[in-house]
Length: 414
Ligand SMILES: Cc1cc2nc3c(=O)[nH]c(=O)nc-3n(C[C@H](O)[C@H](O)[C@H](O)COP(=O)(O)OP(=O)(O)OC[C@H]3O[C@@H](n4cnc5c(N)ncnc54)[C@H](O)[C@@H]3O)c2cc1C
Image (cartoon, rainbow, N blue to C red; front, side, top):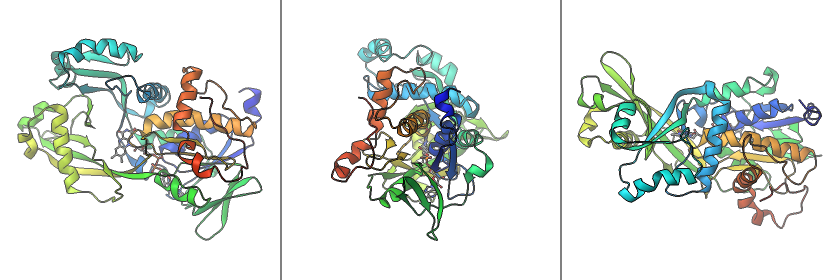
């Protein structure tokens, strides 16, 4: 640990939220030497959206080179470096059924231009795909993709904090800034914690806490349901079930054998904007059945073979431009957010943890710019490009422009 890090040792930082966003940030700040205190309204970690036990992460590949493709490629590398122990299965396959011969011809060139190596993406022809995945379609194999258990990631990260630094059953009603400290106020109006740095990582609820300090962040709820189906081993569909995670319009897990009579197959997920209902919807199970058959290229005649066994429902938080919000709240000294991870909880958490740590370092050092190289293995340009794209200021600068400043802005160099 260098001197710069040692000098931070006694500085207290508070994180609200023990989902994957808050836990991964709390873990990184602890590794960096801060005294991190984590607060959550539940009685342990990963009780809300991050209760999701099978989250797929892979670099995004689109029809052209994009910001999203570069950011997810970096994030996927970081997730692999850090959370191998929380990976349940590796590799994923994306069938490409509708590409024109021209697009097929130029695919290797496109992947090369995207900087994706053979280690990250491989083109599989129909026969190879069938052998490897049991899906008979040409497509892309992602060797570095993985299915993560979000509760396992949270547990790994929070194990770095002492027991006394994890505060359960603490609902934070509001926050306020007094004498350079951020105070947490509970439902009885009591101050139950304070620190110079506060990180809000409470998913959709970040919006409610920000309102208490007069900041209005536009977040949207997006309900999602994943269905686990049981399938009889003697049904026709059983022979088409995938051996790998498959992605496309949604995703599904490799099927697993529950007993001599039954397979289990998890398919997700629905995407219902502006809905927050946590009850299971029959219509979402039906949608997932169709989604699953489409992913593996099976006729809908097999619908009757899929019997919904159990479902997971979660509420994602999303921003208007679908990128997460990670960074400082302008004109609120020492207040940071990490939210709006949408369907990319693993990837954005892998980026948010080192990025938030860099912001906290810069803030406490009184710097007005982020230090360089906070993402291991990424160029300075890519680091600042990510920081700039996900900065919450993109939605807030205009709103807060008229208020008096009590801090230096820590906007990234872009
Ligand atoms: C159906 C579905 C499928 C998905 N699939 C994938 C996938 O394949 N891959 C992937 O990477 N991601 C996936 N996601 C997204 C991923 O699950 C989320 O992005 C991630 O879990 C969000 O984590 P979070 O920490 O931001 O929020 P949460 O997990 O909701 O955590 C927020 C925490 O903050 C606490 N909190 C909130 N307000 C307060 C308060 N006032 N006081 C105290 N505590 C508070 C809550 O108790 C909670 O523990 C999926 C999501 C859904 C719903």
